[in-house]
Image 1: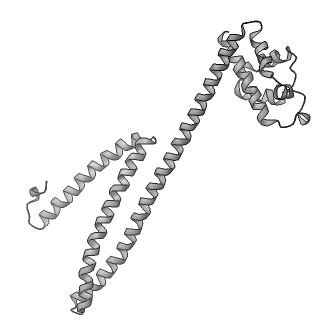
Image 2 (image 1 turned 180 degrees about the horizontal axis):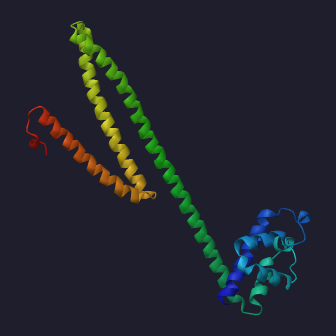
Image 3 (image 1 turned 180 degrees about the vertical axis):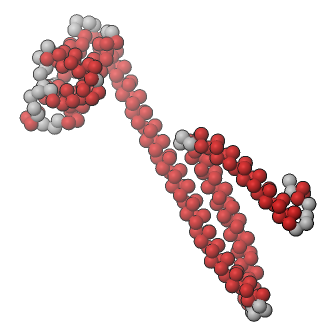
Amino acid sequence: MGSEQFDVFIILLKLKSYLVSLMDDPTNASENFEYTEEFLLRKYPEHKDEIIELLTSNNITCDTQIAFTENIQQKFREIVLGSEPSEKLSNILDKYQIMSIKESLNDKTLDDLKLSREQKLREIISVLLQLARVWSQRSAIENTIEDFSILDEEDLIRPEELDNLYKLDHVTSDSFAAISKLTNIYLEQLIEYYFKFGGDVSLVQFISILDEFKHVVLKKYKNLFKEHGLDPEIIK
C-alpha cells in the first residue's frame, strides 16, 4: 500500500472516532455528511472533496453510516485496499495502534510535566509565604527594639525590660538568619523551575545579575570601611 492510501485509511479511522464521539443515537442523526464535512474541512481540507467522493462512490452517504455501521473498518479496508493482500491491512492497523500508543504516552508525559510544574509552583509559593511571615515578624521585633532603645537612652529602661532587649537582639539575629535561609531556598527553587520549565534563557540572565549583587555588596563593605578609617582592602 502506498503512503497516500495509508493516509486515507488513517483519516477514515479518525473520522469514525470523531463521529462516534458526537453522535449517541443513530435515530436522531441527520442523513447527510454534516459532521464529516466539518471534520474534514477543519483537519484535512486538502483531502475533503477526495474523501467525500470516495465515500459516496462506495455507497456511504451520511454520518450515521460511518458512526454506526458494524465493521465499518472492514468497509474502509475495501475502499482503500481493494483487492490487495489482507496482510498489508494488518500491518497498517499495527502501525496505527503504535501511533495511538505513542499519542497516549505523549499525553501521559504532558500530564506528568503539568503535575510536576504545579507541585514546584506550590513549593515556591510556600517558601514565599514563609518568607513573608518572617518579614512580618521582623516588623514587630524592630518596633519593640526601637521602643526599648529609646527608654535605654533616656535611662528609663527597667532591668526586666533590658533583659528583654538583650533577648530581642538574639531574636533579631535568628530572624536575619531565617530570612537568609529562606531566600536561599527560594533562589534554589527558582533556578530549578527556570531550568526545567522553559526559563533557561532567563536563568542565564538571572545568574549574571547574582554576580553583580556580589560586587555591589563588596563595594558597600569597602565604602563602610573607608568611612570608619579602616583599610577597605582587607575585604576580599
